[in-house]
Length: 259
Image (tube, rainbow, N blue to C red; front, side):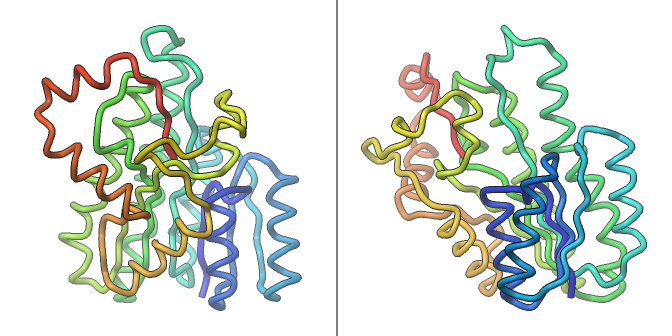
């Protein structure tokens, strides 16, 4: 059994690597930071004795993506695909160079779709497989801070649900994992200091361990869209009930980032 995990150098991706290794999987992990990937690989080899293959590169690079696509198409022993690689933007869409939103689209959507398209035929033939797309609760509601980020996550969640309608008949489990605020280095890279990463009212922070716990538990029940944390689920229900014109008044000027 082999699990293929993108964005596995830290955070949620690294925790998925640990969890699947603990469950008896060998790993193929990808990311841009070779030294971080090596640390994760060494930890897993020491703790679980599993084989870990590292593929260093940027998913926005067509050549690197093509290499990974070829690997997935020609590796019948890969049972799990976790599309976790992601990034945020420091500037708002209207102030940023268009190349940066393009980069986000490449990583969040184009790469994820190409990897899924490469692995699904083999899973279909084998009548089993698991695909986890790490999305975000940012995809359930518009914000003033980062239009591109939320929009890509909305696409990824809906795309995953649509795949479920077809792939469940072939024994393939698909999941859109939609975390809220999670303690990783994601927010620090966007300029939010650790001391600001704290609970505020209904908005609660959580750990990567709890996020992956929710995902793994949901795989057993077959839940397709997974929102870790009761308060996150409650918040999304409330948002869905608020009339849009009122929601717009509340959210104008807000700059909260999620994931």
